[in-house]
Length: 238
Image (tube, rainbow, N blue to C red; front, side, top):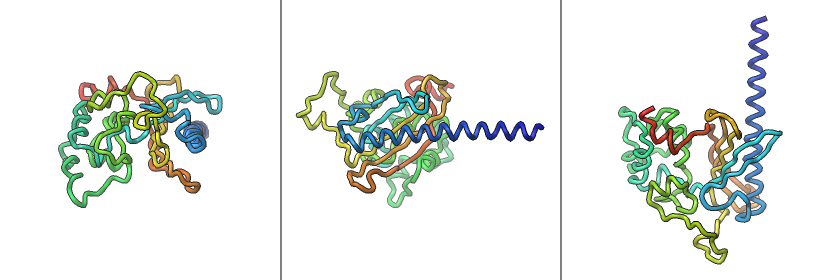
């Protein structure tokens, strides 16, 4: 009887997890479809991080979309910017790991293929990397983040040019044109109205501008809801 009970319980948990996974992926596909069809007129394209509530299978999800150029590239960014980010988050380093900032500038340095690789190269725990992930990417290629797509925290941290509070003119290509073709978007999906530990999905997708393939999935990562402005910046005191 106990074996049957635990088997049934495991089946229920697996079914619940599968249902959640499919809902997360549906939300991501919905965003990709809207961007592919509407381009820079999509409701998901704009300054900073665009966040909306979406209902899928009678469940509410919080979906956010950000261009990867608004994040700090772990491989190509100015080392001072990355150092400032690590210090700002007060993330403890594992002294047994090689110095990542020095190693990445060495010719022939192995580039991390996934965020798990990056976490290992930095020598960070899962909780520490969870605090770092919302601010970094592997798919920007920039020396510093683009202020238009950066979070308010990064604008403040890095000293980027502040976004204007007013509406940008559609005739001003420098500030209002959000080029979708070739852009890599980070799409985060989290259950709405749930605890901070609720699991979600983060996907980075590049819009190719071609008919086929129309887009390329660059990364898939499980995430949880974190209060980056408070909990993570006091990480080493928790």
